[in-house]
Image 1 (spheres, rainbow, N blue to C red):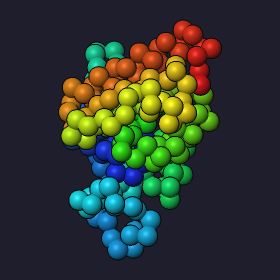
Image 2 (tube, helix red, strand yellow; image 1 turned 180 degrees about the vertical axis):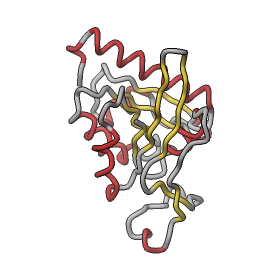
Image 3 (cartoon, rainbow, N blue to C red; image 1 turned 90 degrees about the vertical axis):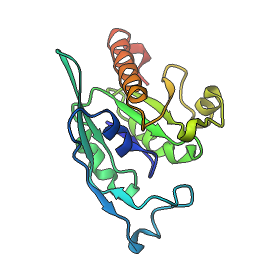
Image 4 (spheres, one colour; image 1 turned 120 degrees about the horizontal axis):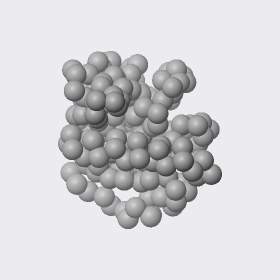
Length: 180
């Protein structure tokens, strides 16, 4: 599951790594959403996810990941409860320029301790304005939760995040005391 705030790059993340043409539910943004969707940091954004994104990535002959990208707006969060069922893990994709937008997703996954999650900072234009430890402190997450950087447009970068999520999930199955 790939979750996070509005406009952080979830659809791009799924699209960049999916080996199939991803199923997306992008819709044009309308004037009706202007009161709900803050475009101050993403003025070029013209579409938004209204249900979910779906992609698939084969890591090896025994491991196929099904990727579900969530909508970021609060009015669609009810969908997350269905998407989390059976999830191997979750990635909270965050825009380091708007860390506060990550709080709802982090809180959501903290309430599902059986689903490991990591935080991936989508460094737009290669910019990370803070050190990882500063981000960890700002998000108030424990030292055992991985905080990584990525570029959601770059396939190798996204693959790295997926591999790290799997490693983390495997660590938790062998050391359950690390669960959030």
